[in-house]
Each structure stands twice: as C-alpha cells, then as structure tokens.
Image (cartoon, rainbow, N blue to C red):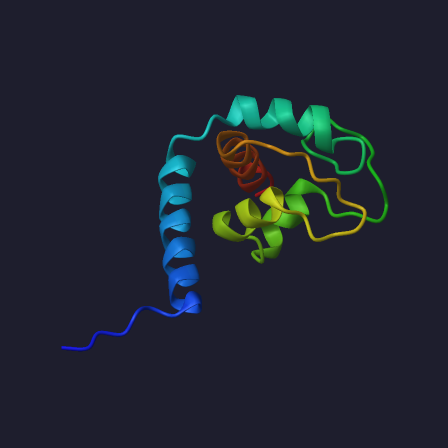
Length: 111
C-alpha cells in the first residue's frame, strides 16, 4: 500500500494548531500582574497601557482600544508579540509565558 506523506504546508498547519492549543492552555493560567509589569516596562513609552497612564504616542492604539477593536484575539495577539511585523514595534524577545501574561493583560483592559 502506498501512503503519501503530508505536505510541508499540512505539517506547518498541524504545528500551528498545536502551538495555538498550547497558547490557549497558557492564557487560562496567565498572570495579569506580571503582564501589567511587562506592559509598564516595555510598552508604556508608546502605548497607554492602563487607566492611570496619562499619555503615550499619538500614533499607536491604547491597550483599551486594542481590546475594544476585537481584531486581536488571544491567538493573534500572541503571534504578533512573538514576532512583531510592524516596523516601529521592537522585537521584545519575550518568552511564551511572558507573551501569555502580556496578552491576557491587554485583553483585560477597557470595558
């Protein structure tokens, strides 16, 4: 019997699916306080990261605006934070746990 090997694209999709499942498990255990600390350290110079902050850059969305937009679910946000595609956004080289914590903190902002 001849079996075909999965294509590279199929394998990539399988790996991505497993990665997203693992991220989903991590987000339930995310540490919001640690996410806030990461945001204050790395993000607050450009983004308004929480209710007490008065200013950030005029050219970037606040964390509250990001949450309200609905465009960044936990998986998209985690993917973006692991490899930012925006030319002005630095690659912070965060661990998966830090990304999970920061993503959970961003998703907790706003109403």
